[in-house]
Image 1: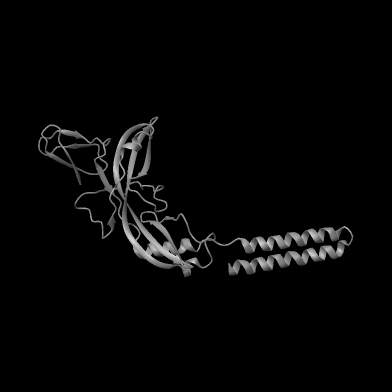
Image 2: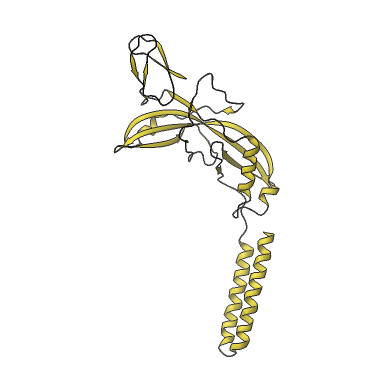
Length: 247
C-alpha cells in the first residue's frame, strides 16, 4: 500500500490503488488523494514467464515477413527480465479521460515508446514490492518536459515500472534484438531478418516477358499462343511454389 501525509495531523495515511478518499486512522479526517503530482509509483506484475516469452518470440519469428526458418535457426544470445520505467498521464480532455504513456528511461530498445498500460493491473510500487529477480531500470528522463505538450487537465501522473523480456539473438552471423511485453505478450523489434523478394521478382519478370511474347504470337497464331500461355501459367505457379518453399 502507498501512504500520504494527513493534512490535519501529519500522520501517515495508508491507502489502496484507485481510491479517491481515505479516512485518517489517527484523527478520522477524510483525506482526498490528489494524483495530479508525480509522487505515485506503480508496477505491473509479470504475466509472461521466460519460457513463454521465448515461445512467443519463436512464433513471431515464424511470421510470413520474417526470413525463412528464422524461428528455428535464430540462436538465442541472451534473455533478460527487466522493469522499464514509463510515465503514465491521465488527463481530462474536454470531459473525457485519456491516458498518455511516455518513456521515463533512455532506451534504444524497440517498441518501448508504444507500450500500453493494462487497466486494473497496477500495483503500488514500494519497498515491499517483489521484482522477482528482474533488473530495475532507473528513470533518467524528467517528467516536466512532457507536461507542456500534453492536452487537457491533469488527473493523475505516475511513474510505472513496466515488465519486459529483452531477447538478443543471432541469425546468419548478425545480431538482432526483440522485446516481449510481459503483460500482453506483444513483440517489438525495429530490425529483423526479412524474406528476400529478389527470387519472386525474377519469377514475376520472367512470366511477364513470356506473356508479352505470347501475346505478340497470338496476333498471328492464336491457338499455339493460348497453349503456350497455359504452360506459362503452370510454370510460373510451380516455380513460385518452389521459391516459397526455399526462401
